[in-house]
Image 1: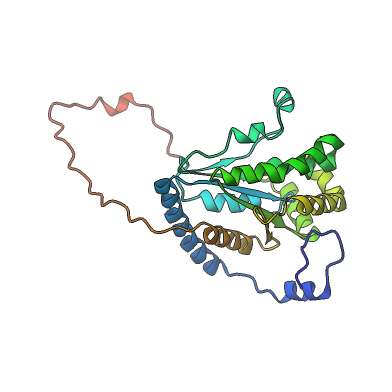
Image 2: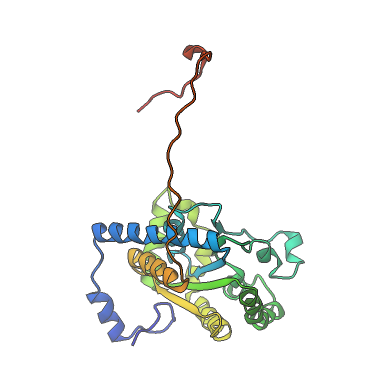
Length: 280
């Protein structure tokens, strides 16, 4: 029986055994499969654009669970005009006085677009709940309203997918230490991350309560086992592709035209231009 890695309780012997025996993907296999899936994402992108679909994909999970890396691999080969990332900062003073979902509604897709939410309205159910950034009334109103809000989105024709990246406490600690010790990753670390590390059990309880209210038949949560980043990325992309029926739309044939004759055009002297020093 599979036990989610961030449940806050002791992991079963069976799960430990599964983790120990689970072989890692080689870089060669990972890269080959990633390229294959990214090609399918391009096909999906063209289907969304051609058919005027509206897609919202939510990525949630603990800090350092691998959400950002997965989003990066999804968008790497896609057109940013079709597939865009939304990662909102903390609300402004004005936004705090609005209807809670209002700031997110402004970023929902138009026809032919896919939006990837790197954290979403579920901030209220976990981060704001645990950190005390919202009141009790605001928290419970969110849990009551959220399923209805998502049903409204789905009834309007939006395809909504929700992914929770599940990471173990030991793996999160390892990734946090890597961020602290690597100058290129240090910017990822915040005071909230430090507090979330301390409040591991509180985050687990908040996640469980959130699932109890918002893991509905119409809009279920899909849990991604994320201790292995490479497998998590591939599994998430593969599942996402399976959830949106699409067909391959062959691109129109392209042929480069001949350049027009440049008779009469004289380029200015090259020494009048300022070039970047060729250090390499």
